[in-house]
Length: 98
Image (cartoon, rainbow, N blue to C red; front, side):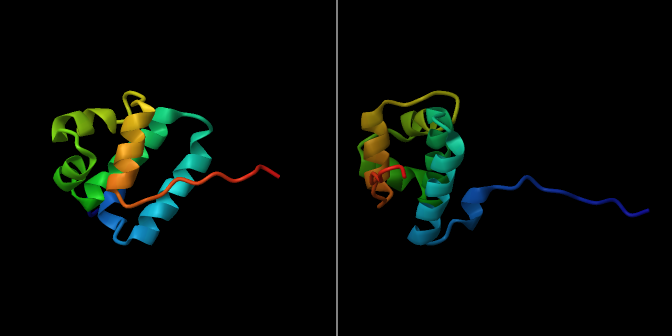
């Protein structure tokens, strides 16, 4: 019997375009059901896809603090979320619930 080798799936390796990143974040927001740490983790995935160092510079944060904020272990402040979203080249929008 041959052994099957598996590797850990990393979504950040598959987020190549701004449109894919925006669609991923939108799907995560819908799935999160109010879990801010889940959304922060999704932003971390996108930041890793773009390059954490560059996102940290663009957001005006240290790379270390960005990793901590977007680890999914905590809920970062909304000001941090807004800085990261802006640094990622994404935009938040509101929509009325039907």
